[in-house]
Image (cartoon, rainbow, N blue to C red):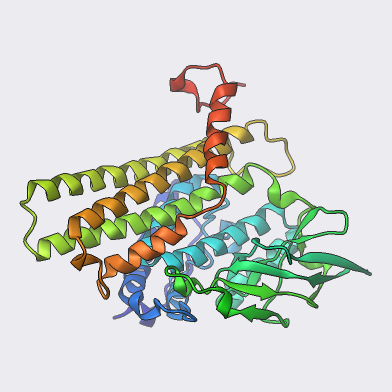
Length: 408
């Protein structure tokens, strides 16, 4: 029976001592979804395609609601610090299945984390119902060019949007994107736009990449959309608060590592099918790939431990001071930097192992490399790396205790 024919029961909220069984259930479901994503990846590797069936699988598996707090019917993934490692393993598995699906799903988790961190109780309840009862998909559409979004007050608690966003991943799948805009005083305000209920203008011709085609990351013009203040999340400039902003990079790093694992699996199968497994040079390359991927897994475990020690809530409670935010940000920046290099190394080793023949379509390695190379090009790489160095240079403790929490 296909996962398309199965609807799982809701994830049962667990007491802390029972969380292990909940995490095991989540990862079991994610493996079935990932396998379907992998099987169907070539079918949607084209412009204007959308992962509709893949998100139906995520819905049926209960993984759209998993980012909600347990009392809201979810598993707390992305909001409960103790669930961080499960979250990262889930994202890695979906990335293994299809990086494009992983990219959109990571945005869904990001959006719900922002709602549950900075939203009012009424907003949290309303948007949780949107996910749980109406199966709405969230996202974060924040990138923009010179014609970026402005939020214009109209009075009586109403606002009008003017301008566009770029790289809007999941157009056609995402129902509740964060479309953050600039207020007249220059501050940045988060807001959620119900794109299935308003008129926007998407430009599919803007997105013509070689990889990640199925993300449908179009340019979208929101000019003329009106919202009331209930759609505004948090206070102005909350979106840029740390450690939430930079700490969230660990999510896309986990998806990327999943792509590297898929490439490892495909490379090994290619060599096994051609009976090239006894070549000492191939053995050495596969050994290097295995070491690199396991290093990535250790980074994910390390950052999960850091967040669990930092606060019960991802990034801490926004109403309290965050004196050690720089530690979490620097560690997250190490994770994304290290995993980017791991993925680049795996790509190069794969290409050397399989040669030109293995990199021609329809072999999946060709698609995975295109998707992963594009996805790895996250912004501000040099600044991210410099931030790690700045953190280390400000400290005086030995290297062995550089990432330990301050003593009370």
